[in-house]
Length: 254
Image 1 (cartoon, rainbow, N blue to C red):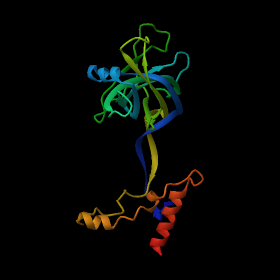
Image 2 (cartoon, one colour):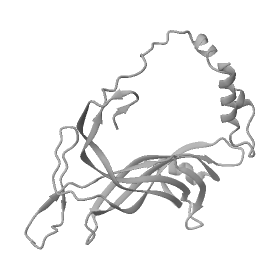
Image 3 (spheres, one colour):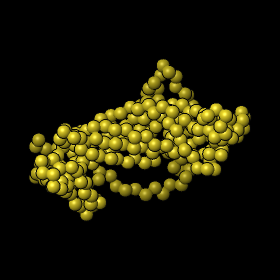
């Protein structure tokens, strides 16, 4: 590789990057996940005749990583998701809803390859962390400290598939909210590694920063009319919006 976008190769440079050693995708249906509420919100739930779940977010993700015994380089990763659900509680049909918020959690375990980590890592740019693992040699009196791989997860917006309001036992005045959630995620194990890369030039932004001094009405006049929003697409036209956008761009260019 001698040039890139017409720029000649200048030198080879060593950089540190996070190398992904293993990853997996997960598609989980979390059926009837129980949500908990504050005391005040639980009172609203107990008085509700029915509920609707309008929004669910992942508010936090925590990890627990441990080496897999007798399988060197592999790690068990426990990923714990914390969910926050926005619930509309209705006391009767036609009544105005009361909005309450509940929380729940779910833990998923996966096994991934994270390579070996026989060193301790200290850095001024990240918290110093030492993870103690069990000795791998036959010496029972040694201490083994090694850097664990870094776990990360990318999560799509959770889908609310179902929401139930149940009383357990049936005569009980306390009601529970059970929500079925569809969750798509990608879980990765990575480590920082030095990599030699070709260097062509420093990255210089290709555009200048601009300060918009237009009035609100002038800014509004520059927005294209949203024609597609007034004509909802049907099932037989899955790409109607994209095609209309393309045609609009062509007409604007012409």
